Length: 328
Image 1 (cartoon, one colour):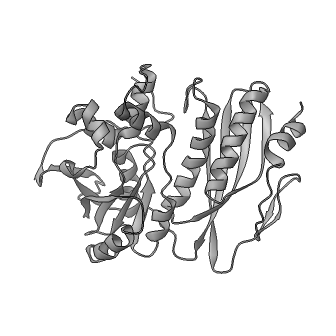
Image 2 (cartoon, helix red, strand yellow; image 1 turned 30 degrees about the vertical axis):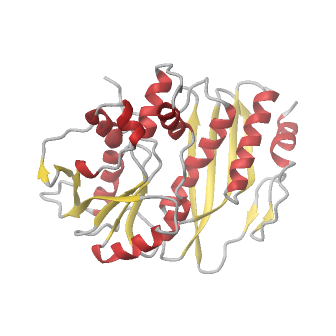
Image 3 (cartoon, helix red, strand yellow; image 1 turned 90 degrees about the horizontal axis):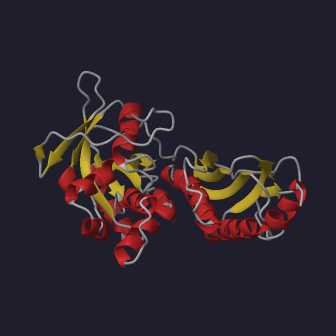
């Protein structure tokens, strides 16, 4: 099977759904799309490389799901409605069983989010998956990192630290023999992109980011871009019962602050918008928790001050994931 046979057999044939904004899809040098009036196109690209982002033992179904979900999470953090993806797939060899399982999971995940695969590329080499996802967001309504304001409340969705704990279990070879282990490992393998939440925030949130590298690291991106600082109360961190059932509270906090790959949203809103947020959350299947507030930066230090039950504490969470940082 050659490259074009592979694309036609596994990725082109199932594409049947109509899309009024796609003029030309898989099968040509480029896809041709249009953007609705008064909208902007949000674009994100993410690469997953074997032994860096995923283990060789991961199932093709889980790999395909996560490759899609992590990109949709980026769109969610901007308040965008996902529309299309393109896929660049690098394979060491053609394994038809693996390809069948991977492509079925990928297309199924896309279908569940009303997203269309419109192009891509395949090549030979070490296994890696690169997805470029695109979506619509209304003009001047995109959620960005640079608009947090002093006095804003800091919120996070869902619970934090589950994915890092699940990864630790997987790396240690621990099988999911009970509900708590299964919950944590699935939170690592199958994160939930908070698409509807992102769209519900577009007119009330000032800044937002998805938590891919850990709360402490990702929040710092907002602080630097917005030229401000933050107070986080550790006692308010949302930790799942499964995480607390299996780990000491101190370890659970470390997972939550520095573990990464939760793909929850962290966002800031004014105190006046709290009631609006609470009303909108009633129609969404996600809980959001206020964990702190934005404060004025002192001496150019865009740092996070940690509290516990309202009192300042000395706390040094581990830094988030960095591809090019040397491990010591």
